[in-house]
Amino acid sequence: MPAAPRIAPSVLFTPQEWAPFQRRSAWAGPLLVAHCWAVIALAVAAGVVLPWLIPLCVMIVGARQLGLAILMHEAAHGGLSRSPRLNDFLGHWLCATPIGASLAAYRPYHLTHHRFVQQAEDPDLMLSAPFPVSPASLRRKLIRDLTGQTFFKQRVLLPLAQRRSTVPREAAHDYESIVTGRSVLPFLIFNAVLLAGFVAAGVWWAFFVLWLLPMATWFPMVTRLRNIAEHACVEGSAVDPFRAARTTRAAWWERAFIAPYWVNFHAEHHLFMHVPCWKLPRLHRAIHARPQAAAMAVSPGYLDVIRTATRRPA
Image 1 (cartoon, helix red, strand yellow):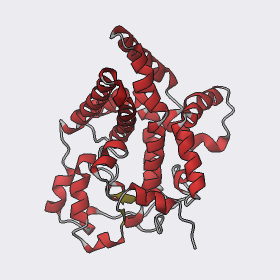
Image 2 (spheres, one colour; image 1 turned 90 degrees about the vertical axis):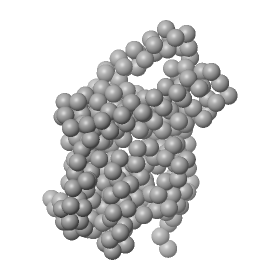
Image 3 (cartoon, one colour; image 1 turned 180 degrees about the vertical axis):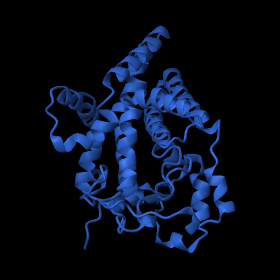
Image 4 (cartoon, one colour; image 1 turned 90 degrees about the horizontal axis):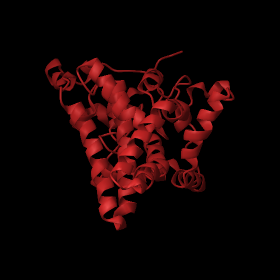
């Protein structure tokens, strides 16, 4: 099983240039988790006070639920805290559990992805291999996301199938199963406590409209867009470390509604996976000051990614 090609930081940077990217912060990770929950709370409050804002709030909450998944991903790399115990506590209980994931299940799965990115052994290969697809095919996928069909499959059908041992053997590394089909009991307990809080506040309906509805609609859709943007239709991704993933230059509205917490800098993340997410913009600028950056796949935005992913080869 050949591992994915890699480069050492010394290929691009002197030890002095590389040193800032190695330093971990004691406070940045916890603050990002707090920020994510604060945005969710403010969006929920805005939807309760001003119901005409509910569609906007659903998009904001769904994007920050993806933000929780991104911060779980950061914890999988040990990036949320210098303390392994605090890193895993934040990553599991405050990021993974609320969205139905498990840090313990996700970490080995995701590190295998890094080791074999775009190789036959890459467990995420199923997310990028089907592309490009027709515009109609992508449209059907997005409709399934926005109408709750993807949510129902991931949160109801997969757990039931696993309990009945009917999941086929080849689905053992299925992304949906690892990321959202496990840790069912902690997910249910967390959400029961959250529902109790909404009931106590006298806004029981807000749990369903401003927490569960975003999770059933916007969250699956932006998760799909994230997955497409990261690896789909990147030529040479299996052999060139500079093309292992795509970076997408995200506008402010894309960062707010599609790609929070610098997840769009995915090419830089795959080059140097232990650089904390909040340092990825700086790493992007540093790499692009070198001639090697010309080989990297960089998209000007998510609309361009969609066009690329739905463009049939000539």
